[in-house]
Image (tube, rainbow, N blue to C red; front, top):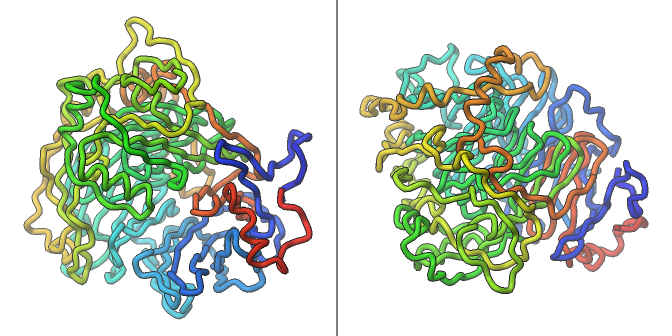
Length: 625
């Protein structure tokens, strides 16, 4: 539990931290856990995970929270900064035997005050669909473990769909399911649909509709996490082999790749506008990757152990209109803007919507300062700012700002290497209704590749030496991390596909056969856990690991440390006794969780007084700070 005070002891946990926006404070009365509040003995158990959904309750108490602790799964009304948590009255509680919940996800499209659809993945490979409000409805997928016997690492509803969901396993495979289909009584038979650089997509051969609809095989080792882009058209996958792979989801086209500095990648997230991806893992770093340029643009160094979660703060990420500098005309940035010209998609949050609207109407860049956070096994929370001196080092900065010496290696994509986007057909659900609009991804088409953010001061980039003579450039052809796809790719998830009519789908030959020898799969430096299910993919000898790493180091896949800017965290605080497993940014607060099973709410600056104003009788006797 959190201790109070000024942090005199080295092992003392911080209960507040300060950024330029103000003070974030831990709300001890808003802590969620098992009802007995006893720290959970986390040895050998799966990570604690948290999922949120808003059911649009008329009372204004629409947030719901789900979290797993060991064999137990809890579902509560989440009161956040408004009222104290009442742990004695969970809406639903489930205790599982023989398996443990590992991850879960709500479907926001179908959530109401009377019913929610919650997917739960398990350590033995099954996936359960439950309604923790109605309680009587339940479906179990992969019940006999005929599809995959390994642990479920990540489960997500396909954006815009009420029936499709995606499941990743520690085997390295990922499966697309339809809630309306059964899984069959025999093991599925697969037919190759598409094959590319270290990935393959298969369809399930069956006379009648059955699950899985698709099987993705990606890289080597476990597929630890995946994340859909904000518009749902692209999929970022973080694997134990150390590679980040970004796909056009509907067409199953590989858009680009990135390699960790060493070890496996454990987590991944998208910026609210879809322009950047942040990944973290066993190299103790957070790595920022540009979607449009397909290259690493920065690394963040602050954690002392593996990074378990990365997340963008859409509320602090600020958007302002920016003017086109004179030097912008005729540059490589302008070239990229022309390539990716198109309409942006409106987003749920205000800053995202403003960004998309701006990009869909004008070609001028928008000023953006990105805030993201990370938590790790070192029990530390880090907050980072991604500012214009890192994003656009070649454009002139505002006179009111102090310059930070950022190395010149972060050059735009070399001329001659084209970056074209994949035309994607909209997906349809089982009812035949269109589940995705036909707008192209703003991160790939509507947003200028380079603009000039002009909001927060730049205080988080470390000085870097200039690129040493003879050093490799990020856009050298060797190890090029961005694929040159054709202008159109056939959708593999359309109405005919959902109906299992695969006869009209054509197999696409790999467009990157000539790169297969240059870009081999790299092996991870270690396992996430010692469970037998995670030992399905054994490591090769250390000699082959070093040889593969040497091939990628110094290329765009994995620049050397001195070749890209190095960020330092705005905040780096120890906030738990056990390793941290959750970081979620909400409108009034941010939520963290540790392996002991405590879910903590941190009030944003100016939001800490909401609880005492609305419900003074329930305020605890202890202090907040």
